[in-house]
Length: 169
Image (cartoon, rainbow, N blue to C red; front, side):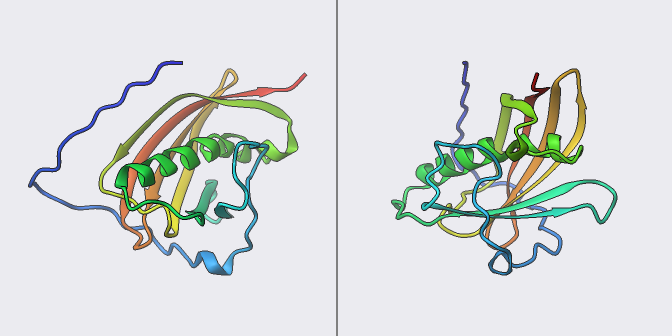
């Protein structure tokens, strides 16, 4: 495994961000926990609620999440929590487009490449919306694009992930 990280100091410059369109209210969704076998996920410390949408003909997963365990007031810890949650749940939309999920254990899945760009700080102890789409899959791999919105529905990070999606024998 290889990881590369780049950091930059905050600077004055133009600021704008897309806002989530009709993000809904996560409190109105059932708490459904992990969407797949994720034994490392502390189930009692991360509140997860999903809303899968086919209304436009394209599959869109809206995954609401927040850490319910106490976190220090350190923006790096909150960013790390966001990276953790987005990696575990990022690749499932590749399967969902074909009406499968990590929960049905029909495919072997794993993230093979992932990039995340944080545009502004995030609070992992507040509701965050991870909106994901899978524009392409072929030859046992799939691509997912993800937008991470904060509790105010402001785009906080942009992600792209590639992962394995191989039919189990």
